[in-house]
Image (tube, rainbow, N blue to C red; front, side):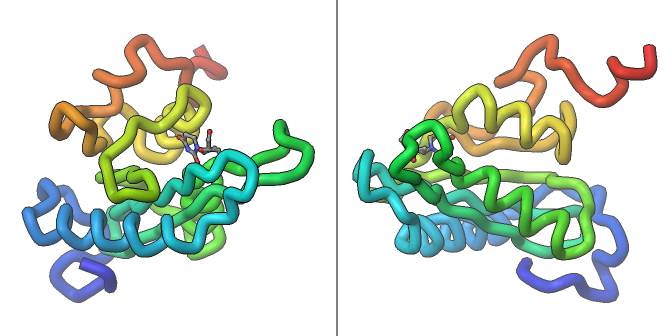
Length: 145
Ligand code: THU
């Protein structure tokens, strides 16, 4: 589901379908092919389904100052916000061989901010909720407690 449509706009509360997942994986694999990873030689691609039906993507962008590297998820979140925002409902992250990988700890925090506990993540062990892969997360509501 790459476009918002009358049926799913402005929000979608239904679970991602098989074809949503297929499209996410395809998008993640494709964008991994555009990664800039001359130092680690480890391309990463990620795709997220937004609650309005959009698919947002990102790839890692490394830097000669290694610590300045942008993870793929940074690009995905940037596209999410630049494209009008919304909530991530499902995310799939792959390496350069197309294998499913886990987002690093920092990037789980990024996904938490924009998808929350219920956002689904494809993992090497199947689909898990964000609150399973980032238990006891610190989030926006902690700032107002
Ligand atoms: N990387 C990501 O893009 N996302 C992750 O969640 C894990 C790591 C990138 C950063 C770096 O360019 C390469 O993978 C090796 O760490």
